[in-house]
Structures are given as C-alpha cells and as structure tokens.
Length: 498
Ligand code: NDP
Ligand code: HEM
Image 1 (cartoon, protein in one colour):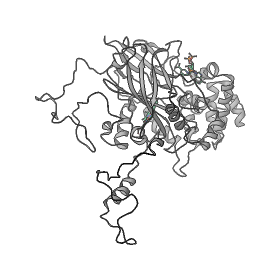
Image 2 (tube, helix red, strand yellow; image 1 turned 135 degrees about the vertical axis):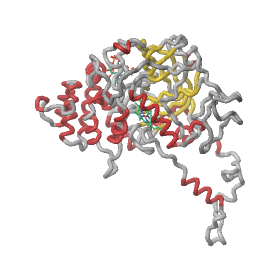
Image 3 (tube, protein in one colour; image 1 turned 90 degrees about the vertical axis):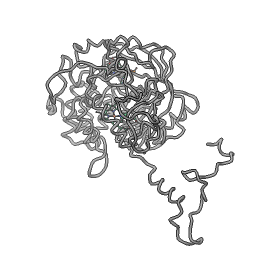
C-alpha cells in the first residue's frame, strides 16, 4: 500500500465504469433535504455492501492461503501416469489454503484443532485437488458420521456456545476417534505456525501408470522448517494476543521472501498387498507404518506468492477431492468416497454454480464440457455444439486414453462396518504413538492437555466413559488421566461404548 501513497489516484466510477458523481455526498433535495431514489450510485454502494459476504465454509471457515509451485525431484511415472509428476524438474503452479476446522470466519488461529492443508495443483491435465489435514488420520471412518461429529464440535442449539461435554460425549461413543484425538490433544494440536507443521493427504489413493499397473498411495508433505508447536498455555495466550497470528506469520514470511517449503514423500503399496494386509489399508483412522511402506521423496512444494485479494483468491477458492487427474483415482475408503460428492455440492451453494469459472478455481488446461449457462457464467466455447453425440465436431471423450481408475468390488447391499482383519482395532496405533513416538515431555503435555480439556464442563459419566478408552490406548496414560480428573482406578470402570 505504501508505494501507492504518492501516486495520482484513478477517478472513482460506478461498477459499470461510469465516472462517479461524488465520494462524499448523496444526492438530496437541497443541502438538508431528503435523499433521492435516482441516486443510483448511492444505492449501488449500499446494495453491493449488503451482499459482500458469501456463506462461510460450513467447516474450515477460518483460513489463509498462498500460491506457489510444486517441483518434481524424482519421477513418479513408475507408479502413476499423472503428467505433472512424470519429469524431474517439472513445476506445477499451486494454491495452498490452510484452515482451522471448527471455528467461524473470525475465530482465533491458535486454538486446539486439526489444521486443513488444501492443495490445488493447476496441472496441464486439469486441476488436481488434494484436500488434506495436518494429521494423517481422521476421527471417523464412515461419512454418515461426519456431520454428527462436526455438530459435536460446533455450537450447541440452546446457548450457541461450544461444549467440551458434547465433544467428549461423541468421542467416547466413537472409539475409532481415539487415534486422532490422541494426535489432537498432543502439542501437534496447537502448531506454532502453519509453516511449522506437516500436511497429509490422509486417505489412501489409487495410482495407475502408463502400463495400467495399479498402486495404492499415501501423501505426506513434510515441513522443511521443522515441526514447532505451542504448548497449550502458549496457544491460549496467543488467541487473545493475536487471533490472526497464523495468517500474519504466513503472509509476512512470504512478503519478506522467507518462502516455506514442504518435501513430498509418498508411501506406495502394491495393489495386491491391500487384500491381505494385516489391517484395512483404506481405514482413515490408521496410518501405514513406515517400516512396512517406507516414504519415498518425489518433490517439493514452495509457497512464494501472497494473494493480492483475499476474498477473490482465498475465500472464493474451492477445493474438491473429486478433482483427480488421469493416473490418480479414489480408493475404497468410504470417507473419501463420501467427500467426492460433498465438496462440489458445498461450492455450488457457497459460491454459485459456476464457481469453477472464477479465476482462482479455473484450470490452466482448456475446458471443453457440455455443461452450459447458469448464474454468472462468462467462459464459453462460442457456438460449440451443446449436446453429444453430434455431427458438428463437438468435443469427444477419448475413451481409449482416459479410463476411470477402477478396482473390483462385488457383494450384497449392506449397511455395516468394514470387515475386520487381524489387526483392526481402535487403540493400537494411538498406543504406539504414545509409547514409541512421543518424547517424555510430549507425553506429559498430552496427559495434561487431555485432563485440562476433559475438566472443562464435562459430565462425570462422560469423563468415565472416555477414560475407559484412554486405558485401552495405554494403561499408564489412563492412570495419569484418572488421577488428573480425580477418578477411581481402572478396575472400577467399564467401557460402555465397546
Ligand atoms: P515411525 O517411527 O516410522 O514414524 C513415526 C512418525 O511419527 C513419523 O512420521 C513422525 O513424523 C511422526 N511423529 C513424530 N513425532 C510425533 C508427534 N509428536 N506426534 C505425532 N507424530 C509424530 O513409526 P510408524 O510409521 O510405525 O508410526 C508410529 C506411530 O506414529 C503411528 O501409530 C502414528 O500414530 C504416528 N505417525 C505415523 C505416521 C505414518 O505415516 N506412519 C505419520 C505420523 C504419525 P515427523 O517427520 O513429522 O516427525
Ligand atoms: C472443507 C465436508 C472430511 C479436510 C469441507 C467443506 C465441507 C466438507 C462441506 C467445506 C467446503 C467449502 O465450502 O468449500 C467433509 C465431509 C467429510 C470431510 C462430508 C467426510 C465425509 C474431511 C477430511 C479431511 C477434510 C477427512 C482431511 C483429511 C477439509 C479441508 C477443508 C474442508 C482442508 C477446507 C478446504 C478449503 O480450504 O477450502 N469439508 N469433509 N475433510 N475439509 Fe472436509
């Protein structure tokens, strides 16, 4: 802004480009008289002002973002034919939007919450959106539970306040959440900045190479800035000191050319392995241990450009897990399959039917679809035929070259959980995290963070039910939480949610 200070300003106009009559005065009958309906300029200003907001995202409302590029450092063509991953040195423009999950548009950045890590690759074969979080797992494994989970995190119907009781009630009745809750309650639930955390694709995806061979893949974006977290007390203090702390940090870092970088590692599972792996590799509440599928570095992501207009480029950005380019497809992860529907539906409601025509959402690849018209559509293909098949050289699908990446499935129609395998349980990986990954300090913080969170207006019966799960994650952790909450030892408790 400061470099604009001394420049000669342009003339104000209406939104139709007509020179405006005044920046200061409405049109009135005499200096003290009534305002006239014919003051089109005043009415345009007021009417437009009343329409400045679009609905905020129903989740992940508070966020920020930046542009950059993804660069391939090792070709992935042995596993996927995705063109943007096939050549060392190839760069693809990207947009990354970070967010908290539960808070509203103006909420504080540093609260305990997972962080969204939504990436758009503007590839030569269309947009590829990888809409992940800063954790490799999630709270539930069936999309039918997602809105209930979110309702337990957001405001209650009577007092419009958030309720720790509702959160622990839901979690303690949903034991599959324990791994993610362990992550969330650790200091990784309060990252110091958005630059100092990892991003994960979280789901398992399908990759298909040029020879039509298939692989399962997981994505990990590892921060090159190093992991840094706030303690619970530091994060809470920062919510008051600077509610926009994360937003400011990212913007200012990029402004001073301290560009944040993430290394992309992938875990590759041969297609056939999934059938016999010891637990369901598509279950979003689990990671693949690195010892089974070692991470392979294939590229780096750099953020080097701030938005010029936050509303147009970040607020109106849209990310949809269904945007997958040739060589990449979904897996049988039920959560991912549910999300394929949900996001474009949200965008049509939140931004409008032609949201993909907004500059930030437009692909760099050419668009030749048979969809037409609708509010605010302005891109078109002239007099291109509007139906297919047609005799007039309208676009034709290349069915030889581009096929859906598919897997085999058959069975009766059922409403049931995934079939259990030998090592499918809700506690094992959370326990490994506690015992083998967290340092002694991390474990101390985890226990005290849980005790603090569960002590905030959570009913005794709910505390006890949740505690039974903590014992199953790790006996020692359970004991520490019981002690912190002043609850009787384990032997007197039963897990009613089993
Ligand atoms: P490894 O020892 O090979 O990997 C442990 C992973 O934990 C590393 O990716 C590391 O990622 C991450 N990590 C380190 N410190 C923390 C922390 N304080 N909080 C959360 N994650 C941390 O073991 P496994 O692959 O067998 O995984 C063991 C457990 O680690 C899992 O049960 C899971 O809870 C957790 N984990 C596993 C991941 C995976 O993809 N396998 C990914 C993240 C966590 P970093 O480089 O960021 O330090
Ligand atoms: C945003 C639905 C699970 C990450 C959203 C939005 C919806 C939604 C409706 C708002 C979209 C918008 O208005 O633009 C769902 C459903 C889920 C689910 C139905 C499960 C069935 C997940 C999971 C992750 C995730 C598992 C991460 C692994 C995100 C992110 C955003 C988001 C990062 C913000 C995107 C942005 O920055 O615009 N989700 N979600 N969601 N979701 Fe989900």
